[in-house]
Image 1 (cartoon, one colour):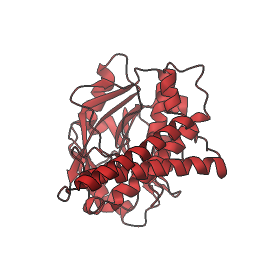
Image 2 (image 1 turned 60 degrees about the horizontal axis):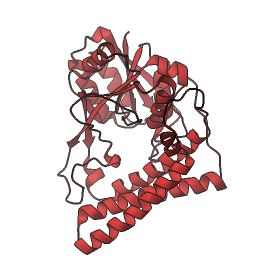
Image 3 (image 1 turned 180 degrees about the vertical axis):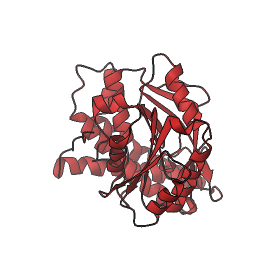
Length: 333
């Protein structure tokens, strides 16, 4: 197998069925890739859905991971993968029919060969866009990504795990996703892929992360996520907490002998950078809040709540680090 596609899922049997149907029409030949469905402690029909799909998808493998946590599930998929390239896609997404072919062609056609290729994550709205959502809908809580129409080498870890492919050598050299980060049931922790991509940049250099806009997946934005601001604000809190935790973990790493990143970037991704960003987001949220009240602008109010939640989450995580615990370590593949 040249490529392995890892799909981690938890109690989303109907969404998983739709996603697996999409792989029946991929332009990449079925013999050129394998599908690995990692069932992360599901209690619904997930196994039945995977078994039914395997009747048409002979390249599908089902794996059960009993320890709840998205990072753990992804690490299980990495261990099971046979391909030299490992691609990840979320269970609530749908890829374009040429998604895999574009990713593989990108690895083969660019020089130097990227270590990681990621693409666009565009919205598939399942309900009307609410009036309070800021223009562009590029809020982190909606897990969307679009850096434009042209391929770009990225100097920062700015790709999303919902549309991401890495050469297996990255995991051999760095390890696996850090299980201190990543969603665990109703805990909306994140940033495990950002931490890993930061390590890729330090390990392999600046021309290692490539954005490929022609590799497109559509992320479902379901009604319960946009029925009100509650989900967006809650997710923003966890994004702030997760980013602070990620930078605390980075602060305990030593990149002195292998990094070519400017000192400003390393500072930004360390603990004091987390403190500065959290404080800035709190201040900006307060300013936006006054503007929203003065102008009666629902979009500006959303921006205010997002910034306040993000900054508050970061500050709380930093205080917890100093008062309660120390950062965790990476798993090994």
